[in-house]
Length: 195
Length: 399
Image: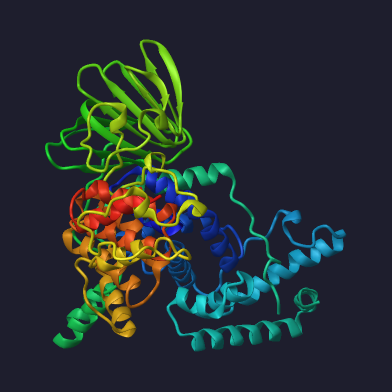
């Protein structure tokens, strides 16, 4: 019985022969996870088409270098995180976060209109606060606190040490708390999270 | 601050995803064919720095993800190529379909339009096809057409009229002269006999039997897959007291001839000893776990480099399996590595016989069970003679 690992190796082999069906299969297999990761880092789907495309094209460009030491998914995530990092640094620290238009998309939307509005505003203000952070801090914070990855996994993805990653997350958290102290909407949103 | 799961991802609509996918697939071939770009600023650093600093910088840049220069040209949407083997076996992987050919086989493979069509002129092939929506694999042998949707089967064609089809997993549709038969796993079809159960025509296949063009000759691919249907069923434990005494024969050529009857608690003890008595070929002979782990780390980049099918890669992968088995005692990992070896190198791997024996050694070292018997069966058909083959034959014949 072929394991997922063996399937990954064989899929990469097929991609390297230039087989379009294999490229399509690889994209379909990993697109949802990569999209979710980029969305949580950036806070919206603005420029997402370009970012997804760039991430996967870089995957294919570097595919020859995949040594099968890390899983294919981890390796692709690493490429996607690098693309996100470049995007954040090239666009400057101020990234215009997409307003979330779909009210139901906000968790807690099952409550009343006031709750939905709070959630929507809270997310917007959270990402506005994240816009003030460095790209590295933003990546560390969003991957750990929002995407739910462990510190060691984040460290591996961003190519940094666990200690440095922990420090970045801590600083980002402090900064968010400072902003929240002066912003009742964000404060209420975060308090709701804590509750 | 707990935000995990609180910020849902807005999905991209299908049209956007389809556009992205189209651009990526179009760009993938180009990117795969071109070497990875080196950031322009690196050239500036290199020019400005001292020679040693520049060398270090370039070295750093080239480590890890640096591509090899053996760029693969983009392929056309539809391809046709011919395979004509004389003594060599060959394995082709196309769109998830693995096609293994016997020696003296001639065929032409065309792919495109969601189909892989194999035109056989003569010989015998085995196919392992992964089911994929909208993809069809068709084998044409003379006026017979075999249509597959996700299975493992073999086709033998004498180049004139006789076609034999054996199915080990899934099912295929065989069409001849406008009449179709569905052939399910465990059944065979031939132009002479029509649809029959494999067990009916080949209850036991002699280990040294040469392949012929009859249904009984449906043999396993060397190392690619076990032929479960052809492996004799496992004996009932209660019936096993003295396996070889029951046959009234001592296994010829075995490393350890019978000296005593196996104890009742483990009727296969002597057989296991015979398995362990066979040497592991091409053993890198590293005893300490620490040294073995370091060696595995060293071998991995060689063995796992994608599309590296050279002898160095196959040897490295095999040695990893040996090291995982012996000093490191990671048998599950070793078996997985052997599985990868067979999937990647198949009959082209020079270490195939050794790899097949290592699989026997690992599986039979735990228990003489179905997995062990399948491994032994594959080995004895890849290597029909020799001391290890004798042990393998004894395993498959054990009652």
